[in-house]
Image (cartoon, rainbow, N blue to C red):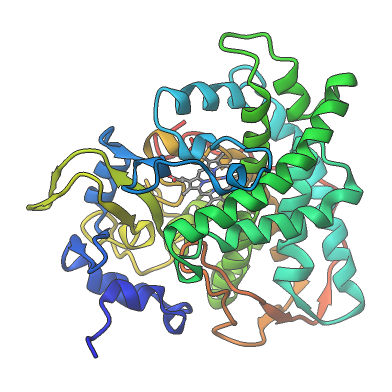
Length: 428
Ligand code: HEM
């Protein structure tokens, strides 16, 4: 039997706990071709170039054989259009701009900072529950509830509906795992779940249209700016996108963060005395243990010459963001976790026109969560290292992170907090 390629080994669950030696192997050849025609790109400069290349498409219909209708419409379900994550310009830019208006600057500058006290309150409540025991699972008891509650609050989803969102988000995230089926099978499954989500959001949108609130959906519905309003289908697709994109990713950033801190107790201690370190520390986490390890959704729309080879038109790309983040030709001492690293234009939020839309919220959530854990847990330690991982190689993170601790310190009065560093990567 043929030896599995390095990329296949990365996808193999056996290497989930530590894929970094495989990424180092991959980087020896910046662009490699897999037997199925996928081009795997593993070095910083080449990934950066392709993220910014207008000849690279994020639209699944650019793949040969994928131009047809969606499974949801085939099955008579109402079709949810593609979200802007899966659109190319000009539709991408128009929809992203519309979605940005109620989310952040310049139109709604206070939205994310306004969530900070509320996030701190949820975080405090979750950690308070640790007090009557000395062992907990950081994933299920802390990192998981926080982002889904945040995104539901942002969208205006009632509290009692949140458990359903967990299920939908999980089902959608599973479709990102290349090991769960072919590109086409996963796209079909995604369409089915999106149709269910579309039904749910449809009712919510009706109720917000009748009685607008202070949430993002109401903001989109009542927008009178240029290109507004968003069509109903696009609105539903945007709401589903925000739910999924901001869910597992943030869970993994918080969990990877706690794991990394517990592996570096000196840094944990330093954070306690120097809380402002949290800003560069979270950026370093996004470089060192990025929740999104790769993007496998791109297709070339033309022949592209790069790193001495030509990637033919219509080829699938696997952009290995986590490998680029450890590229020694871009980052000094890349395998070292350096919480005060300043030259840190990491690829944790990717780059170019699809640069993470939710980056300010993700940063805020991780800053608040990790700082509170560091402050309040007395002598925390890992129960198992490495912890068990979820199988997904693209959105990589532990399934559980059991920790033990001696006690839980009382919460301090909420401080004003630390501002998110905007545009740290030169992106918006
Ligand atoms: C630590 C947490 C997060 C990480 C690591 C992360 C990472 C990423 C990455 C790598 C992309 C680029 C995808 C691509 O190029 O195909 C992206 C896009 C996106 N993210 Fe995030 N994300 C996080 C949190 C969030 C949150 C909280 C939200 C929602 C509020 C969000 C919303 C989005 C959206 C809407 C896009 C699509 C942007 C576009 O296509 O223009 N993300 N994210």
